[in-house]
Amino acid sequence: MSMTLDLRSPSAIYCHASGTAAVTRRTYAVDTLCAMCGTDIPAGTPCNPSRGLFDAYFNNKIDLIEGAAAICGHCMALWSKDWLQKYSKTYASRDGVFKLASNLDQALFLHRPPPPPFVAILSTTQQQHLIWRAPVNLDADIVYLRMGDEILRVRRRHVIERALPAWHALAAMMKQHGMPGLPAALDREVARFSMGIVREDVARRADDSGLGPHVQTLNGLTMGEWWALQVLRLFDAQALAEQAPVRLVKPTAERLVAPAAEAR
Image (cartoon, rainbow, N blue to C red; front, side, top):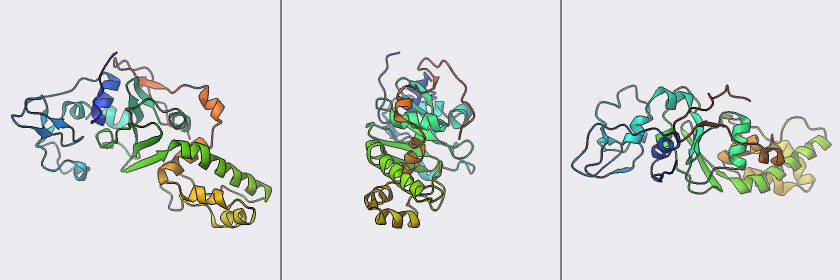
């Protein structure tokens, strides 16, 4: 299916990726913006009124475009239970919507992301509005994804070429000296307070062993890069190269595989 992706709107990318038609009700006589994804809506473009949709139960008012009176057809089309829940751990590109729920899904995504533009989301609670709030990726080497209410930023090559070797070097040092546990606290949802810094005892031993630069490398990671590290450390790069991501929806809107229960 040949299509031109709207690079401004994450909702448009998801609609194109799944073959989901825009939902519209009216037009406006003046130029406006989508209150949700912020994309331009030129005068006369079919869209939807936003009035009355954002009631007291809508939790993301702070993310809306102030003063915008319309919602684009793509954001409206994705305001459904499937997109708020069933496909809430996915990424979308011109080739479809892909599973992003398990460690393996996430490692494959980080090891071999799709050609830009693409959008990635990971829910942390039930029925979160994520797609329209997610950044559009235009560079496969610096990846952004929306995890709940946070935006994670990952320098892929930095994690793969520097952070992973540093992690493995510290882990090997710990094994050699009989130190239990991991070099640092890790969490799949980036929720642990202690995540993001190498343990003090490990850092001291690393300095004594001439491995201080590895500690500095890890302590310089963003939280998104810590998230990427905790996923990628579990898999061999060659094994990842031999596997393909799970596509859930084709651009023709054919549902291929129901999202499996999240693996840990």
